[in-house]
Length: 276
Ligand SMILES: Nc1ncnc2c1ncn2[C@@H]1O[C@H](COP(=O)(O)OP(=O)(O)OP(=O)(O)O)[C@@H](O)[C@H]1O
Image 1: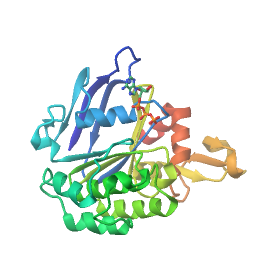
Image 2: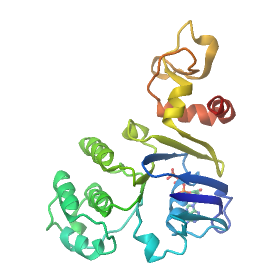
Image 3: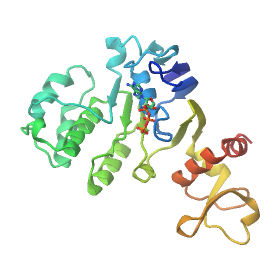
């Protein structure tokens, strides 16, 4: 569905932010885009939407360049950035003005989400808190029903109950025609939601795997005397956590934070096991 080929980008006078990045995103998946601060996750999302121009390479959505920002492509994608401005309008006016750009927009779904988020249609957006504005944008983004939805740090600004509400809403909105890409540092907020992990480091993609491949090949759990010789990566916090080559172990739940740290510490080691 979405293909990025040899993407290369830097800001004026900056170091390279992306160096020849190749990525394919398929429908029916929720991708988690991870990387340390400043590694280029938001930049990659803006390149995908055509808001930035690559120095080299391109992104296509259904075969059309996203950089051209044609009506055909823009109706198929929606981007929720980390920082945004919304106009000083009642929620229903905002919906009325903007929904016309999205042929599959569901007003019913939008107002159901608005209600679930304890907002009401006549509220003036300019009088809402940052978290409430984010909820308006998340509700709108989901109601567009675009095949591609990009969310940059979507849970920033959401309170604790809203984070689990967000998880539930997002899980129910994925279907086989949709691709969702989420960039976040709040790994726990995405727990059990994402099915694919992409890690950017040093201007490159150092990891790109489905979590089913990961859980087939790796085991995540507590260290023990029996497994100490097989440890691929370990962390000592909270009594210790280890990644092992799964081999004869029972399947375990993928620990996204441990996997992220393990990949950053030695990408070749983890990648070579997943290749076999
Ligand atoms: N408009 C800009 N002009 C110059 N440099 C920029 C601009 N926007 C971002 N950068 C730089 O590009 C790099 C990548 O930024 P980006 O926001 O894509 O990273 P990120 O991975 O999303 O970071 P974070 O996790 O902190 O949100 C950073 O070093 C940042 O300082």
